[in-house]
Length: 362
Image (cartoon, rainbow, N blue to C red):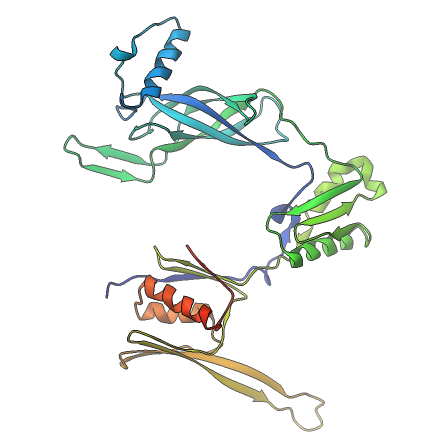
């Protein structure tokens, strides 16, 4: 069997770390605008678009006409130019003159954008209004080298890159004004428990009648009368409040890399699994603690779950302590089980009801 490495990561955020409201939610008035543009990248070392990309040839001739140069499309042959789409997401609070990053992506049959320079490109919204322009040297972070015989070597992706601070905002975005009496806080990942925790944290900070959770995503906040004259200060204090975020019990399996990511709330009930020549048994060993006489104590019962794994009756792995997804994954890793088999095993555990949590395969 081919040796495959199974790596697993334990996420235990919900009971260990509190998060700020600004990290898990956004407030009324906060927003962004996605803008897009079509442009040309020049200065490529023969890795640009070919004549098959007719829109590139048309764009070059149109650009040259602006400089008083007229050329025929039939006679124009260049591999140092590539047609690209330029995209960016701009915060509504940015003012004219502010700079922002833009992403440049090839449209034609270019082989690499490495070393290219983006020419001035207007950036507009979906409604067609131009808000700014982008220009500058492209940072690709990869390379691709081809030989005349057809061989090539590459690293990362060289047909998309970024122009750091290459965009300049020329016209203000349509900013939404922030109400001064009532505002709404929206969770980026809706959850009823987290929404209730946010409302309770806000009330603990500003008063019991300030916030109320309307549903799993929206918390309505009434701005105190003494804070309405300085709404920015109030919002800054609100954003900095730490909240306990509730996490969904989930197991994420990546079939390509064999990675198993399990949340803190995921548990596995006692079960027995047979997969090919692999046998897994998860047994329950209750531990009873009986207090001494006249100690006023109560009897405590701890259900100790211990999984055992065997293969060909010659290789046995025993995991001491409570049974979790992480321990089962480690046992499967020690036996060099393929990612496909791991996914099948966890799917069977979920189907049998032994896996408490959501199973997500990517």
